[in-house]
Amino acid sequence: MVTTLPIELDPATAIYDQELAARKPWSRIIKKGQILRIIDLLGNQAIDTLFYNAYDTSERYSAPDTIVRQGNIFITTGTQLISNEGNVMMTVIQDQCGKHDTLGGACSMESNSVRYGLHKKHLHACVENYLLELSKYEMNKRDLVSNVNFYMNVPVSEDGTLEIVDGISEAGKIIDLRAEMDVMVLISNCPQINNPCNAYNPTPARLIVWDAA
Image (cartoon, rainbow, N blue to C red):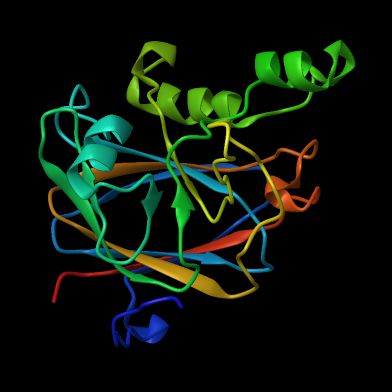
């Protein structure tokens, strides 16, 4: 059973509302107290996301610190996203999916070639999306860390290996995140077509921002 908070947010009162096309990157500064809603419009779309302190990008999301702090490898309602300096960056205040991946990482041209054959290396991937978007901030590959894969289903098998399997999200499912500091949010709307993370068919997402109450 998915636990959600009774939060009513009217898109008509949002300060930002945009559809992010399939396979595309996106970034925006979400100010402290603002709420970012990510909507899986058509279902089973992985939305790879990174978080940076908006004014000191050397402070950024830390998967290990987040996992240790909450004692869970999955993200859902109530999860605090922790930085490499131990600060809370964002809090998940509502989640209609149930769990989101912290371990699977981002696909890249190199990983595509290793997993699926050299003939797949030319396919666009999340790392390349990230690098395109990071270049706007004079950042590069050294600024990449392990990301959150919203809506991606990555269970852990009995032998401890990770599996990428069919998603558990459905069309219109939302996750709401409240910024606990000014955060630069970086998204790759995953272009992967070689595994079930996107149901082999990348689709658009919707991003809505509300101002602090």
